Length: 192
Ligand code: AMP
Image 1 (cartoon, helix red, strand yellow):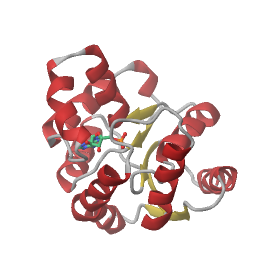
Image 2: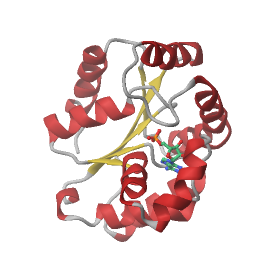
Image 3: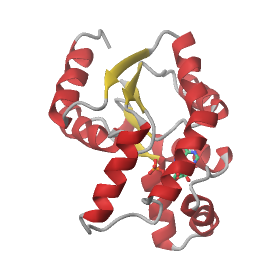
């Protein structure tokens, strides 16, 4: 099964993806994690992406499409994957559909985590107040920019998948385990 976890930055996509990896054996394909790994490794792709990521902008479509295709061809994706933070533009969604079709696969389900912006900002502020380790892009100014980019470039991807009849929406403001249970119930009710 190939799943897309969809929602604004901070909605809990990463948390739920990791749980799905544990409970369903589907690897989490997070373009954000892959890009941060490239930055940590000091690769040219990482260096070029860092500037954009630090200011909350998207990296170019070709960059993420390339790293996703390479990652998807690893043997652990034989039964599918959870896409986390990808696709973020219509061009990426189209490229993903093409890539999967070329492998005789498809996206089976898009889970939308619905949250409100004020709550996302409050979450960032409480992470900072708690003094824990925060990412370079985890601050109120960058989050505002990332939300802007989300509404402008990423939210239209939802309409793309709605057109394919694949979207199920969930309350991302609910407690983590409540969201996990709801996702579990949706997956258990599917034929794939
Ligand atoms: P994330 O960890 O998913 O929140 O991603 C962190 C940052 O990485 C984003 O703000 C973007 O700069 C970049 N990024 C991650 N995934 C993508 C994507 N699919 N398309 C473009 N940029 C991305």
